[in-house]
Image: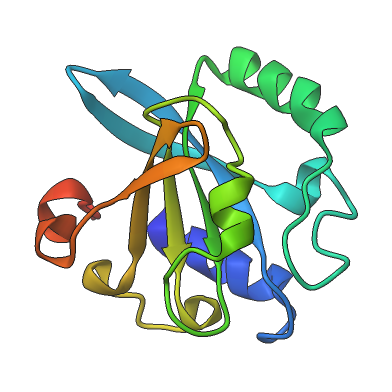
Length: 148
């Protein structure tokens, strides 16, 4: 799934000319999240990537919740790509895709050009009130595991 997700993010990013992203679907249990599927932002909102940066129209959340219900999953995280590093922009900090404490946001650097290494991924946990906690570099491998 990880390789397919990264490939789709690159494809939707039109050869590194714009950001792209996805909601990551799966299950939460025992304080852990398992990601099993994804829905690309522009599959829900056809204009989400038109400006070159992600701008998701909230009117499309109903469709997202319907898909989650049909698949028996929930949104456990989101991911989007940046042209350079994996740091959060002020827009990322001010506009979480899911504004619920505990939501996880991943940022992939360099428009998800391969190889995308776990240690290069920005990982951010939403605390609420436009506050985030950054998962430190040293903890990323423990926090985020890509199973094959």
